[in-house]
Amino acid sequence: MERSQQTATLISQAQVLEGAKGWQRAAFEELAAPLAHSDFPCVFSRNAFRKQLLKFAFVESAGSDGIRHLATALTEYVELSSAWDGRLDTAYPLVVLFSADAVNARTVAEYHSFGWRVLQELHHVDPEPWPKDVGKDPDSETWSMCFNGMPLFCNMSSPAHRNRRSRNLGAHFTLVINPRERFDFFAGETPSGRKVRANIRKRIRTYDGMPHSLQLGSYGVGALEWRQYGLTEENAERSDMCPFHPRISVEKEELPTE
Image (cartoon, rainbow, N blue to C red; front, side):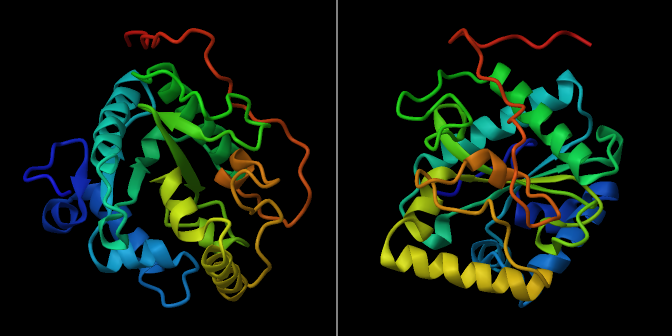
């Protein structure tokens, strides 16, 4: 359900087109180029962009103010998404764009490290406890990043990606966030879902010029979610450990004052 008014934290695609300026406008235009490309692998993102369904959050800094701003936008996004009616044309992805000043990174690994720090700090200020049916250990097949009680899928895209072009959405570090349930609904372990995934992976090979990552899989069926959030440039097995750590207390933590 669309809100009659948008806040300053969660911004509609139409509002970005109408009023974004400076780095925010530049970041949007860089993002638009791959999403408008006919071969871009994620057909869901292309559909959302074409129909102006995207929601945006622009983060100016990586300090406590920036995290609070993002947490507010993500809370609004989860509240909006919790009323989803199951239609593709009401499935709003959230695109989080970070200013160049917010990120001190040059390599894919450094961008991923920054992304995980952001997710960790969001977890520390999460207003709701971790859902009971979602694993807390990232090395569990049932783990997924959660916020405000909703499991999410977080795609990390960075300008350092050269081989894996589908994970490069311009000069700014980008998180593309969707509710976990939408992937299960459209591309889960069903005949139609497997067909959708096969099509996307075929498109990855065309767009990237290389096979899809070995880490891509289906939720709860052998693949670890966290490794799919940030894909490496090479198609290789991975043995690295997830940097995300679940908080011990169910009470939210306060960010220090800058």
